[in-house]
Length: 375
Image (cartoon, rainbow, N blue to C red; front, side, top):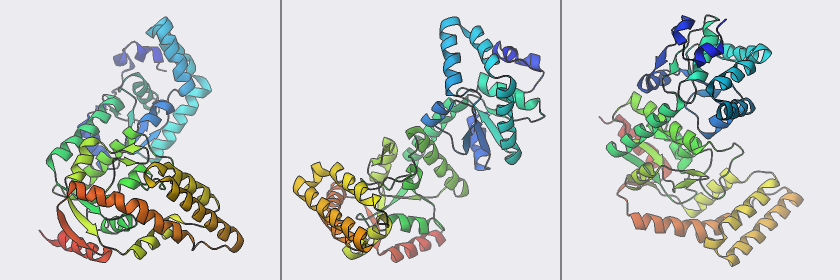
């Protein structure tokens, strides 16, 4: 049985094992082939930034990692390795190996990663090798892969063209994007960010870490360009913030400089879209949207904020007493006219984008279908 100390003292050769590594370029190729990643960092590290196609199966959990880290600071590397050897032993070790083995059995095309491609991922490789499972690890770990995805995104923004789907709030841009994505290269930024993009757009699913979002975005672009290297990708018009997620500055400026395809739709149509997307038969929505309104009070104005709150209270009363939701359209219309439309008009007029096409949702879909078929 291979001892952790052997690896900790850098006597990898003594193990008589080939601990294979891959570069970030090779990682890109494998991820495009749908390889999975076992990330053996602690869950707190993983929560701060994850790679595409990765699952967190730590070799040391948060508490164990903290103990080893404290030992390292106080007593040095050798004692820390000894402590790690004690922790990752017996039933604890067996349970971790079992989880890795089960994952690899379900996903034979798997890679291992830790933070720098060092001790933790090497140990995992050794333990799996003892079971006859040979898996590559990312040579310089998550840290190098994170830099790679960031650099690829930056390079893309500096060298390629993009298109932006724009239109007033409620234009149905996300639904258009989803339909267009069936035949034309498109990236749904709100889906990646797990947020609908407005003060009212929080979802039940937590948003990813900023670093994770940027990694996912970079990889989505890679996937589309692997199919068509000359693809001019379509994105939805977004502000700098999607919930808590900041669009990378170089990417945001790219969107701002892009040609736009603008959705034409009536106010009534937009009200219907908002009603359909945001209003559902649960009492909790009224508290949620009241809080959202007060988040924008500074720009909306106190008097209008109070009026919208009263409208929401009336809608809640109507729902609880009669099971009706239709009155929510009253405050939705006011919010569009008072807040979202002026903001959109100001932003659009300030940047004066080049208009590539303007039309109703079905006209935009048809236009992009024709663009797809043209060489």
